Length: 474
Image: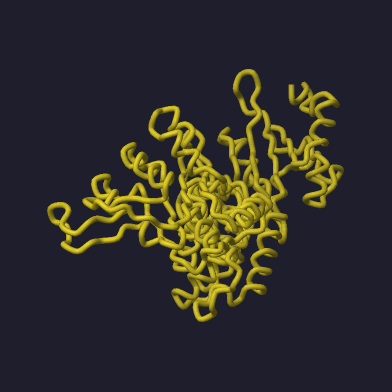
């Protein structure tokens, strides 16, 4: 039992357990009276347990919004961002406590302090802004460092870059693996730029974007007039065009079995025949391939040749997804914001803390490509130089929408002072300060105040009761 018959918190062991947690924990009974306030909560809010235990949580408006609606509706609230105090940023989860009959007898609210994420994000973005103020200026030539286009300082990325630096100086074939959007082509370009072949061409071909019947001629070229509709002049293929440089084979896992055989033959003796040609052509090129597929699994399924895999896979470079290098997100945010601000001739927007928390907490299934698109959207939609949560793409904003049994609680920055307006299941939640302001503007006229707030007079009376407010007489 969480509460005993007198409504007090249960066994002492429970209190010890709650005090051991790093998250701030608040437990209230059915009357919204605080029954436990753990040490993490004391540290987070600077309020001692002695001061708040036994008090009604409704007197603390920054927590009452969550607890009150859980006690009333019995619906849990999950992963809601809030800034209860200036400089304090938390993610709140509030759950109902029920008795054996299913009745709500209390609530547990936890707050995870994410202030360090906001501070880290701001520090990294400001550092990047100062250190690289000309990095995205198209009038400034690129730096000589071939690895400068790989943005990030996370250990997982730097380890891959270090391996790439070493292998770049050789002619070994490289297989780059990673999810869509992680920047595989940028890595291939950096390997080329950092190699002894840097003065040669860097030629790319997407193995999944060219129809199978045309791929052979695209790769190897063709002899003039060798098939119906072809040019009468000879045409060099991508391999031939890459002479003395690097050929990047993107989406290598999409190759048909027939083309895999022909590519393997080329890799074995570095010569090939144009389509319709009879003379072998020898070239000196380096092969860098990339895939977002599991080639070992495709080999087991009989869709990729084992001998070709081992020819390509002399050295593997695994590019980590963005969710494994979240410390790089602020840096990338600043880079992309600068890029698109220059493109659209707009000031670099100031990013609200809630946006940083959302971006740092998102899993980024589309990786850097998705983040880049999101930053372009922010620059375009930012109002008055400020990028707010409402400017984020819908899939990222969904982090703040809590859906449980058709109900949701979301925060929308709308007040003049920047404080959020809360909604539960689409219904607006009005805090005590907003009610006081409306009553002040209407000189205590509840009917007029309710009309200004967009609620009924009865609903206003319910709020006055919940917040234990004594409204001025009409």
